Image (cartoon, rainbow, N blue to C red; front, top):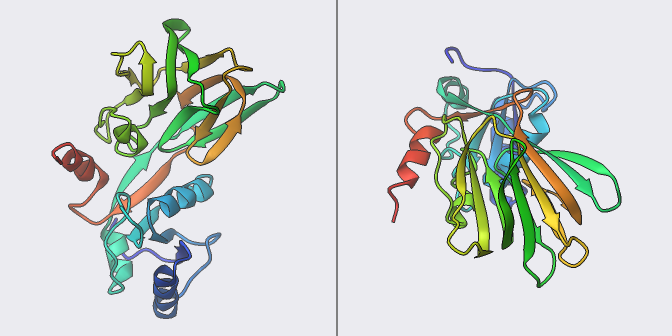
Length: 257
């Protein structure tokens, strides 16, 4: 990206610090409003970044984050100086979402998109039983667990990593399939799949062992079947300062201990 990018709009996670920074930046650089912005500057943490990316996905507006959160894995360091030039010099990273289709116990079918992961969880004290089907072939007849998730490379360092799943290079054509507290098969630790795979989760004994499905922050309860695939119809673009891009962050995460 060569010349400074205009116009810019600012969004905040609502904390006093982020709101104060947003007010200062608007006074200094103006604010075009999100509907007219060429770039969105998000002031907050990774949660705000995901919310902003979902809201701007249809417009494909790039988002440049500055950290006012806890982890800030998707954010740049905060600085109010020379922001247009900094945004113009930022390196883009494109992410394609997962599309989740769920069949609910009431007979309805719902869809949602996930940039990090699609997760299935038990809704009660009982473990759930889930059949895993990949491209029409049953690969695991019955997984007894607290849940299971399918992660994008961008999401592989988030909940997937906490569930002991693999970290995927950001530009890899892969997805991570990771169990959450598996009971049987006890030693199954998941699988790495091609990003063209279609993954279907079928719940067993859904009345006795109800399951919820979550695409990032969109949840549906009492699901019977969940089908997930990567979609290329939409994408989002994150902007990172040179030398601090998502590819470097994912690589560095693999050497933390």
